[in-house]
Image (cartoon, rainbow, N blue to C red; front, side):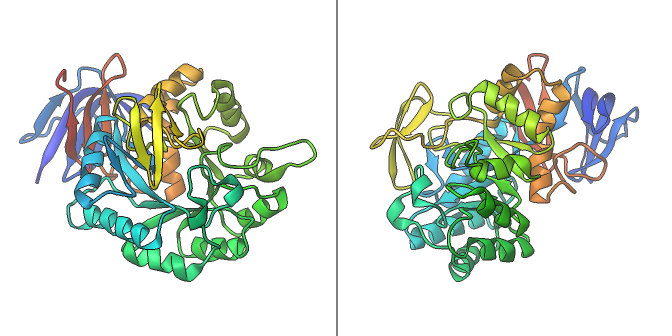
Length: 385
């Protein structure tokens, strides 16, 4: 039996911050805000610092020089180590549109990282493509886009060993609504994106089970007073909405507007990060595309179209703190609970409650990360801690 006590910490519970001891046993939370100090335990001095749930990123293409469309299993582990330093305890590597054999190889590499190399932070895979609209392709290679095809999805899912948990689909494509319904019934979250769908087409997909939207307002048709389009369906319905809070993809007032329209429990901060996250400006790739990063802003070298981000979840949290006047409790729940609820993993992560995984972030008085636990194991330890 392995037991750790974080002594005298300010713990974010569903009821708010509570002062006390957090007891971890065999990778799970045993007691929250407890006065107890069981013997034979590893003691970590909390010193009144905040403990919040580990962050969850459902949309990332890589970091620290690794692009998931080129990655081997060991590269996925490298990214997980970096993400831990940014407070992330669960993430969904995103594989985007590419040659079908390449996509299958990369899906298999992510599965190997989780199932053979023990990369527990990989909670699943986000398949971004190839069932997307050429008109809103963004950084997707148009000649590799496909019509929705369940058999092709099954080929991808077999390569991923069942790890594809979310897929982005353009709902206006022929067969998209039918595929949405089928995948939703199988437990795969369908996210609407890279789409020029009409309001009616988007609502049909939502009624068929679509659960979320990919990088809301980016890579989709925007609303007009005489053409409500997909965006109005997204805002009017109860689906979850990804938002990239880097200050480039969404202007800060737009972030505030989305939070006001959708409510705090339906917005999901994501990074949509590329291999340049954690790296300096320069030239990189995103799948088959050459990308140039200037001032932290990533764009396709050929067209200047924005291509993912260099964001981290820690910086997304800091930006939300700067962009909004939300209470601290709400900020931390935005980067953990909402994604966990969307992905159906809230039973074991996304909040600090007895019996859940010890996926935790210890923050100092300056809101910098001192310590991160993933399933009860220390995955990041600040030198200043």
